[in-house]
Image (cartoon, rainbow, N blue to C red):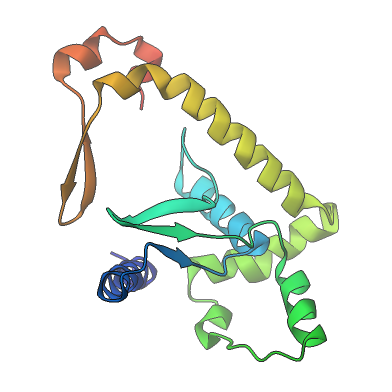
Length: 175
């Protein structure tokens, strides 16, 4: 497991634990459009196929807690400008500048190239990912009645019976 992945798992466990202690049902996160695009590029580079690209506006943190990301349509510059306008302070994570992390390579080397190609690429990426998600949900709809979900210490596992799986169209068996 990479240090980035381990840190993400630790943050999620902390948020879930703290949410349960405080009786919180939703945690609002500050992910923005730049984070979304970086994540999408990172996923594509790692070979993500059908499914979610980028970051979902709402996802499950634990069985009784949701993560909500209301800023996904705002760029980092938009948010920083707003914070400056209202004279609000913020914290900068210094690890975001460490080029040793793959995500930071995308942030500091790849994203600026896309910016030179089209300054609106972020909005185009978001639109593409939303269309991709809608198409994926449509294509995978026949699987829903066959799927059994089970929570494990590692997360949620999905099971489909072998006979039901083999009865599916071969295209759907790829997923």
